[in-house]
Length: 323
Image (cartoon, rainbow, N blue to C red; front, top):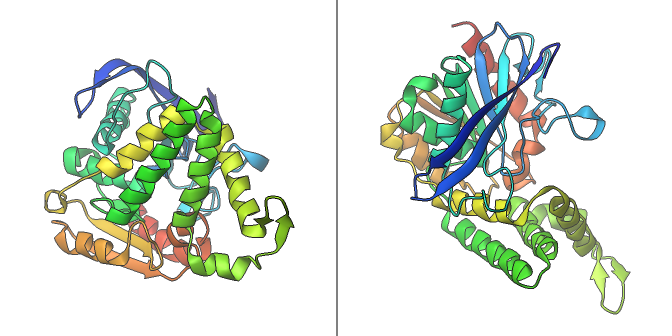
């Protein structure tokens, strides 16, 4: 499918052996291109819930990062060709692999670039899980990316985050075993939201108003429940298990990455905390910079703090376009 400034691309990879010894069957890489098809290529990736619809789609035809990826925006579609992809696995079922890593996701992207003759990317801009995949690509396929911008992601997961996600996966498996996978997903997402955001945001936002009795519920509980309901409608339980585990398996050696890298993080991020981001900056083998900003939104700042991020993203992209 192609329309003005937008093009869908796919690659049928078939059955592929993965890093941890299992296979992914019938793997299709789905990408979406936006913007100036003659411009330098930027790859933009988000968290495990993100899709290839970075600049359009969804409610009101807005992509998950359309505030930033737009004509005249910090990531300017008048100047750049922007690619985003769907992460594997596409869904659960017999084709869903037992284990997939960020290195596997990076290889899928490289295979798509090769198949479509897109050449190396001028830059990858990856947030959260997408930042992990971008680091893996730079380590394992350095010839395919010239610059990195990594937001809220480090060279390894933070231990408490691994613990939180392990609880989430056990909740989902309990739901599957009980024949209620969506209930498990909803509860896991409720817990996840408390790790994505900050205690200060919830204290500022909720007055602990009682919203029901027998059993009692409160405004914060209703909010978390609504987030769980939305998530369960868009995420398959087995797919969630694979992607959540993939975050926890993520490892790169910063000394193996020579690609010039801009790191960005909210100081309040509980999942990619500032000490880990500083360590990544100091250990990277290529030129590196760490840009920090304050936010009530913690790890979710990359989806909320557009005003804080826009100036630095815009200057990053301007530097790419003038080369």
